[in-house]
Image (cartoon, rainbow, N blue to C red; front, side, top):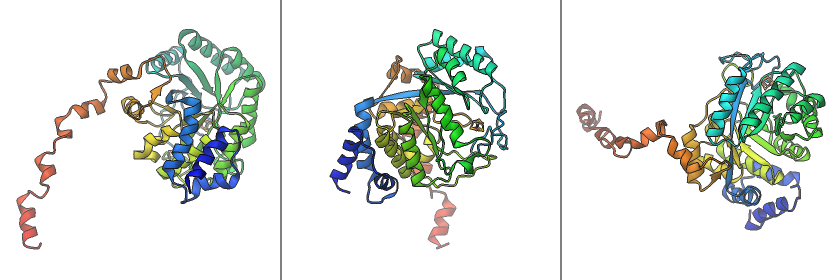
Length: 374
Ligand code: SF4
């Protein structure tokens, strides 16, 4: 594709136009579209709305397991045999201590995730109390993910000061029955509607790798534009042993970057978050995701670990980005003294090859057998 094609993507997106379906499909699949100019086109949009700032999110798995739903990808589902540490909802003091730690780690937003179909009235009031306490103590934005909600419960959370409600669409309407049978795509959309009706910002995204095709991804990106999702987490499936769903779609780093760019073109102002699976699926290309996405998680995900805090903060700093926090990025990095990476960089042998590296065939018998043609 020529330069005009890429400029056109930026221009259309910035002028509020929705890219046509054929172009969207091409972005995901066409070998004629190169990823670097595509990222550059997405970056122009990211820069306009989010500058060079990265919002850091820290997730708190406030209740692990005990979920009656059967989302096939989820380690906490009733159908899952995954070897997770189950626990009921954490005590309030523990949740507050983790909010403090998140704030001190540079988090802009603190996300509390509660497994389950949806909260009871009593649980909703409990969540409201927690939200009030956190908001009164730390200058953190608070996001809750608590399953299906109706308008009344959403209002209780809104009154408590909830900034955002997370409820991912996860996949397309057509693919939804393949990943869950205990609730529907429409149930999920209704929860988003309830949140919007009472004025809570919507955070909703997807999991790439659930057996969907390119048109499914385009549909989700357009649906999230339609519901005006302020925040869009893009997860890349982390296939957990014991869950019902094995990785169905082979993801490559390049494909994952194309997905992020597509979401940026279709949702130019949204906070697009590269979420679970970035380390596994983007690998050495991870830093490039920041040119389309403007947000990420540190300290891992719900049930899986991620890169160390130091590694992620270093990646942000080295690419010339900064963070959306009243904590200073350089100071945060300086404080990270206990990380294994720091230790490794201090090790002399990381830089200087030893004899075994330089002469792997030094062992006499290996050289002798080579001489003899053995
Ligand atoms: S994704 Fe949420 S609702 Fe689905 S099984 Fe996991 S915890 Fe339950």
